Amino acid sequence: MQLLIQGKPVIRAFPKMVKPPISGYIHQNAGKENSLNLKSWLLITLFTVLLSTVVLPVQAEGNKFLGEVNDTQQLVTDDQVYEIDDNEMGDRLVYDHIGERVEVSGTVQEIDDMKIITVKSFKIVSE
Image 1 (cartoon, rainbow, N blue to C red):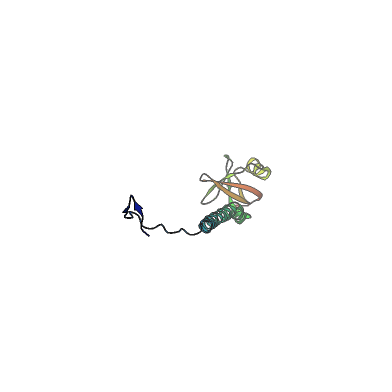
Image 2 (tube, rainbow, N blue to C red):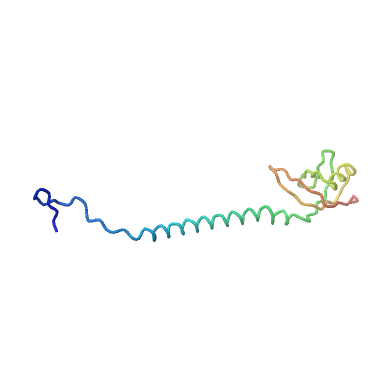
């Protein structure tokens, strides 16, 4: 079938339009792909956050450190200086045992390149 305008045949400038696939099918697949990527990203992020905030401090639990308490509320070991956290055991350690060699059990957190030890228990070590 030819298209005629004013009795003259018209040459098609554009190819025939092809029927697009069902739009619901395309939309449905695109949404699933995007939501799958979003769900995967959220799960990975959640897992990473949980790992860093729950598991890592638990691994540091129960660590023992041998060092000397100085007058600036720090525990000085052979290779590291730890700030002593402000809690009941930490206060007893800092105020009653300055200059003494101690073995400290506790958890360590690192904040801005500063290691802070939360003292769970300690004992005086004879030199």
